[in-house]
Picture 1 (cartoon, rainbow, N blue to C red):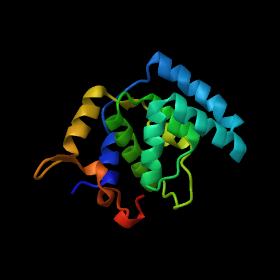
Picture 2 (cartoon, one colour):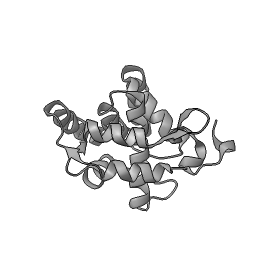
Picture 3 (cartoon, rainbow, N blue to C red):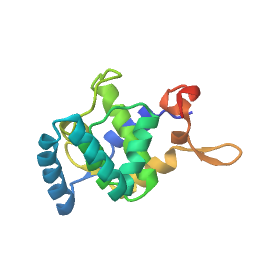
Picture 4 (cartoon, one colour):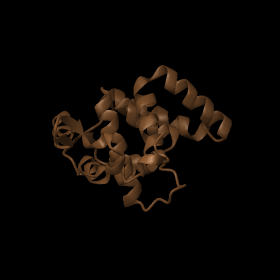
Length: 163
């Protein structure tokens, strides 16, 4: 069995490419937005709007909740903007789990946008080739092809805790 934290480490140590110009601009805008989400009401409103407007945000946030990871809405939004398909969202969720472990975050401690950018992806984001390699590497081939990242045990959470 492959563990999500190990797959996430592969994401954090993969060959990277610099952010595209549009993603660099998005990051700057997200950093500015981050300072404005200073109340629970503003954060909830942002998450509700992002879920309806950005499919990748809904997928990534759903996986983070399922995996019992706490990540700021702006860090989730930024990572979601890097995702072009659901599998990429799952890979970024694994990377955020590995980063949370690296930074020794407690169960109720949230990963911030700053931590994700500075500690997780300081030199850029995984290349498309790396994303494909890591995705293919997390496949399980037993009776049928499957994804390790779809199993609660891979995330080290108890199946009965998954809704």
